[in-house]
Image (cartoon, rainbow, N blue to C red):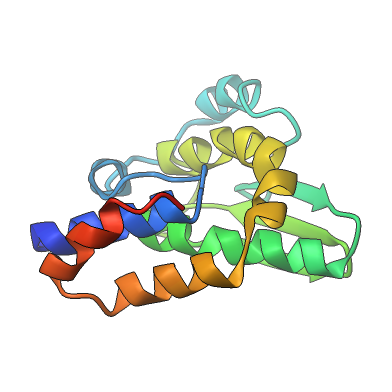
Length: 162
């Protein structure tokens, strides 16, 4: 079991990064053992994730950005929530387009975890322009400092508004 201070650090990093594709570690553990969804369940859930399609037992969505830099910034912001959920999407980057594919390999198809991540994507995409403008070396430095901080040192960081 992960120590409480490490859980707090992970939560802080996610919050500091303004990531909206977050599935908490507790939810990830609950959903990790999910059973593969039936075709009927997948069809029903697909209506809840506009823009996503099912291809070869994967949920797939392609996002288009104004340029390569924005596309890569989007990919970089997927890292922490993917690690937090211990659920890693397949990514295809083609200049200003990013195709995200989700599946639960352990279950051999789509599960609740895949849909939980896909359902969070619209909020994330609506916030992306703001997140790109909000990035600054100071904030990046603060997040890096937390990565190497001891539990007591994190208390001061928690009081700093990013």
